[in-house]
Length: 157
Image 1 (cartoon, rainbow, N blue to C red):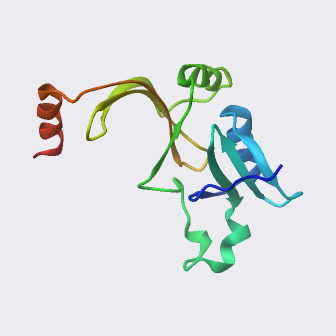
Image 2 (cartoon, rainbow, N blue to C red):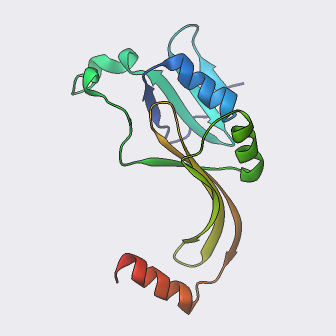
Image 3 (cartoon, rainbow, N blue to C red):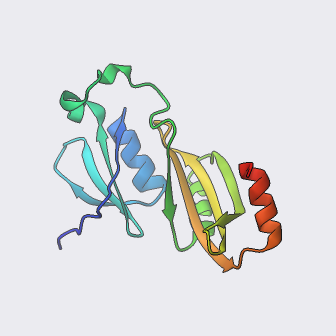
């Protein structure tokens, strides 16, 4: 079976490939879609989402800076959101495997311009400090005046 590659696939550099593989596959439940022997690089999938992980030395010859300058936490200023069909079950499985969330599971109303989307979500750091957010849409509803007031206050408009 040939893997259909998404149009955007983040590649996350990791400091210890085997530790990252165990985290993504053993704790979070990603599946290995591609791995070439002992090469410290893997293509992983989770409910349609795709990422790659690689030890930074594998790709280090084409970056414009020296990889030695990479410092924890990697990926500062970005978080990756993964929509999953059952975030509660995933969260419980992650906790049962001994992982500590960055933010425990909670519900949040997300403004989608034409509606409010109530999502249940949690955040976790991977071994190199990448912020991962796993979310499930619970329901949508129309935007009302109280939402507009909160959004105006939140964004200072």
